[in-house]
Image (tube, rainbow, N blue to C red; front, side):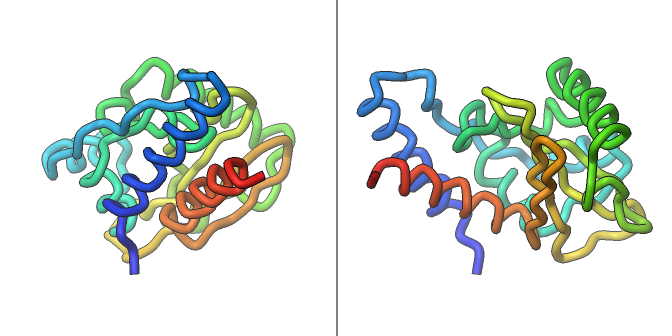
Length: 171
């Protein structure tokens, strides 16, 4: 069962601790306020996709996050519209054309959407959202240097990001 509120709160606390311990305040920022259903619908319309339940729940918990683990998680106002999103979407097209692997082609009836990118490297997170009808879950991929790690949904990826922060604090 997904509990975005708990995962977002825990991740924010872990990031704050990590930033304080490392003396690097830029490694932490609070999540954005929740998106409205109208914000979500507008982003879906701009992109021509239907977000899955997990992603919609995340957006209803926080509408983007400038520092989510090692990534910048886009809000609904950025998706399909923001300058940073457009620039990174262009980079994704080049990535898939040159070295993409498992995620190089979205499944039939789906389109890849950039939902996050790394603040420090050429790493990005894409989700394969359906283009004709809402589905309960969509795969997402953590892509970096030709290695495309698949996840069953965005929540599974976010849990891994939170675990990575916790492991870093305990080592």
